[in-house]
Length: 325
Image (cartoon, rainbow, N blue to C red; front, side, top):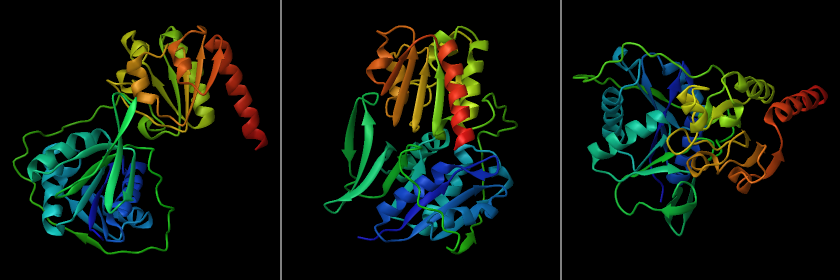
């Protein structure tokens, strides 16, 4: 059964986030040969339409308004609901990002629709679109289907492979005029505390520090290793609580959930709350002085040693490998 599926392209700092392309790939599966319609919401975002089409969208609908320059759930909901009213799709896919987690329940409530959140896989089995999502802090997985109405889901970044970019693809780009009114919240300014560089939630490599880094300066070796590997730096709640770093770097049940190809845990004991945020990483490397640390139970590779000795050695070896590759 072919379906029309709408995908919201997420824009940050004038560029499409990678999760937008992963959402298109998921939408292609849901569509089963039907049409995938990309949506862009913002102030000056129409130039990004080609990116959605090159990654699999068949056409793009753009909603532009000065009031949409910065995200508000009120404004974006009005824009997306107007697109849905025009397109009347059978499916809707968003990224399970801060924006997606805020916006999707609002849309589901307005439409009186169900919502499958934080999907890590999607497939068609026995005539049903089946979504897989983690439960119990990632210790188990459940499979869910939509039995009636809109197939609405958010997909976790770094889990569904995007389609290969094809710059020969073309598609219609149409503007939709929406009156954005009665905004109850207006964003005057956004102050970012997060470090510059690779987006933590979409990073392919994450180097994380726990209480074992001992101080804010203790994160410096981790930052150097992350720079060599093109990765991002994260932290446990313990490191954040100790004021070694900002809470924007926190990974865990009450922080960000990451699923990189490589996760290196440095001086992290492995509390269950932290494991909930990173245990589904493809490869986990743990560095800890305590051979009994819980983190070793989920690690693919463990190094028992002082992170201040081990991490610089790893950095030097990776530098050598990059020179010779």
